[in-house]
Each structure stands twice: as C-alpha cells, then as structure tokens.
Image (tube, rainbow, N blue to C red; front, side):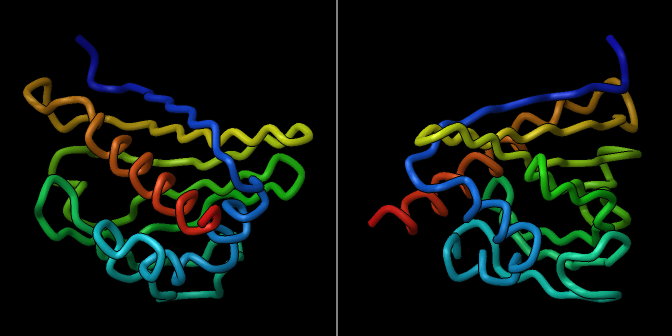
Length: 150
C-alpha cells in the first residue's frame, strides 16, 4: 500500500459548465451562499481571486466537523476550464503531507461534466485515502448545480 495516491470523480451536470469554472476561478467567495452546509467562507489572504499564486482561506464542514485550510492557486487554464489548488496549511495536513485538488469542466454542446481530481501523500499508511474529501467536492457540485437549475 502506497502513501501517494490520486482520486478522480466525474459528475454530469444539468447547468452550463462555464458557471462552475467562473465560480471556482473568480468567485469562490460566493460558494458559501450556494452551499452553506458545506462551505462557510472563502477569503483572499494574498493576491486576488482568479490569479495564479493567490492564497485563499477556506472554512468548511468535513465529516460533521468544521475545518479550515489555506490554499494556493497553482494553475488556471481558461481553455480547459481548469483550476488547481494546493493546500498550504490547515486541518487536512494533519493527515496528508501534500494535498492538491483540481476542478476541470468539459463542455460539449449541451453536455457538461465536472471532474474533480485529488492528489495526495498520506502522513502514514494508517491514514485512509481522502475519499470523504472527494465526496465533499461532489456534494458542493450538487449544491451548485441545484442552485443554477432551479
């Protein structure tokens, strides 16, 4: 059993994929209004929303417990509708030495698919793979979809 891993989840959505990309690229602070059970806040600590190298501070609920993390925006690709975050500090680093998440949106006509990719390195083999964090990402995706299709 290895300490490093990668998990991927895809979710077909009914609303336009550009909405997701725009939210996570330029307006992540609005996600707390859309998914308040999961995301409590997202603030800029350095830089600006939508800028590579910027540092964001997220407060969220994971497995019934309030947690927080500071992430650095590592990559933004407009053509691929991709935003990649690397956790710099926070509760999650108690279990994982490294943790990055990437949201990517494929749009093809009326078909829109959100793909979440999580790459991680566990602090020990006793730590579970971060499937629950991927489930959190899918729950947020469902909330955003519901918000934009009702």
